Each structure stands twice: as structure tokens, then as C-alpha cells.
Image (cartoon, rainbow, N blue to C red; front, side, top):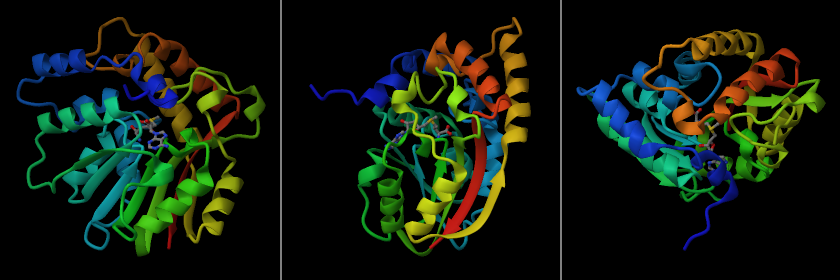
Length: 274
Ligand SMILES: C[S@@+](CC[C@H](N)C(=O)[O-])C[C@H]1O[C@@H](n2cnc3c(N)ncnc32)[C@H](O)[C@@H]1O
């Protein structure tokens, strides 16, 4: 039997994949829209709006072939495909790649280029040199213990003139007060937050030129506070992050708000090119 990677175990242990699909089929027999899936498949702070904003940094005409590293359940991938990008999603959590594919088969994406799903590790990308025009990281680099190696691998698979965009969590000035569990880690073991300065230094050393950096932390805090209010209302939502994380998400969601409010974490957008 193949041992389950400890990080994949963190993401898969409460995942109710079969029940999720049955719930979707019961409530959305004609197939869910991207917005209906968002409480489940946009596993980052900021939901669909954050993914829209990130995708707007790329151009499907000049940079059609996009690799989403740490694609999760694929919310951003399907948005990208609907805009004409040829999306490949890579994820180390096999249960996520499988559910991502099953969700995609239920969503109507007329005229969208086909999607591809690969289970693999960002520190050893299973792709040829210069095989992508663009790479996206959305709340995934923070899970990776060797960011320098992941950035070198990203540079290798990007063509010259390639673009790399990130919507990531980085450490804030008050990182010592970080509270666990958070959605990406039950404890410090799987949380590999860099400061924004350290991350931009690594990108520079890895052969990327900085085009744009933005601090989204205030917007992220306001969004998460609104989500928390919705999560506390008594009526049962059709889908929610609890289908992925289980009851743990109640504490994870609260800790996210506290960590942002106390400056333990920041949410940033970065755009670099090579
Ligand atoms: C917080 S989730 C974000 C998922 C998705 N990007 C989103 O925003 O909805 C982080 C994802 O990164 C994946 N991941 C973490 N480390 C990885 C690695 N070394 N290689 C590939 N995927 C990884 C996890 O399995 C998980 O699906």
C-alpha cells in the first residue's frame, strides 16, 4: 500500500467526497455554477473575487497554458477555463485531484479548453522544461517546506517570457502569536510561511523580475469576517468548507480572523515574470 503523505492526510482526513457529490447532484441536478461551488472549492481567503482578480493579471491570448500549483478542488481552474485558459491543476493530495475532476465533469463550461489534473509534488514537477506560459499559486506555497526548490522548478517549466502570479499567505509582523489550527495546517508542522521580503528575495534569486506586489490583508480580513457571520447563521448551507475540513473548520475559521486581525499573517498578491 502507498503511504499517504502527511500533508495529504491533513487535507483528506475529513473529506466527504462521495457525500459532497451526492449533495451537489441532489441540489443542482442541471449541474452547479461556479458560484454555487465556491463555498466548497475556493479554499482560500477571498473566494471567487480573489480568483477573478488573480486571473485578470494573465492574458489567455499571450499566455494560454497555465499550471495551477496546489489546485485543491479546482475553483480557480474552472474559472480560468471559462476565460479560455488551458488549465492544468497539480496537487499533492490525491483525494483533492480526484474530487476536482469529478466536480469539473458536473460543471458546464461551454467552449472552454479541456482541463487536466495531476497528482504530484511542486518540488519535483512532473512536466518538461518550458512547457507552460504561466503558473499560479493560490494559498499553496505556504504549505511547502522548500520554497526555493519549488520556485526553481517553476522557473524550469515556464517558457522565457512566462508569468507567475501568487495569492499567498505570508507571515505578518506578529507571526509569533499565530494560532492553529488554520485550514492549511493543524500545527506548525505543515505551515511554512515566509515574510513578503523573504519571498520576493527568493523569486529574485530564482530568476524572476518583480512586476507587482499588493497587500490584500485588509480586504481579506473584511471578507473572512463576513464569511464567519454567514457560517454562524443557523440555516444549513448547501455547501461549505466543513464538507472538506469537518467540524475543525469552526476553529480554523475563527483562527484565520484572529491571525489576520492580530498581524500574525498577511495576504499578498505577487506578479513576476521571467
Ligand atoms: C489551502 S489549499 C488551496 C487550494 C486551492 N489553491 C484553492 O485556493 O482553493 C492548499 C493546496 O496546496 C496543495 N499542496 C500543498 N503542498 C503541495 C506540494 N508540495 N505540491 C503540490 N500541491 C501541494 C494541498 O494539497 C492543497 O490542495
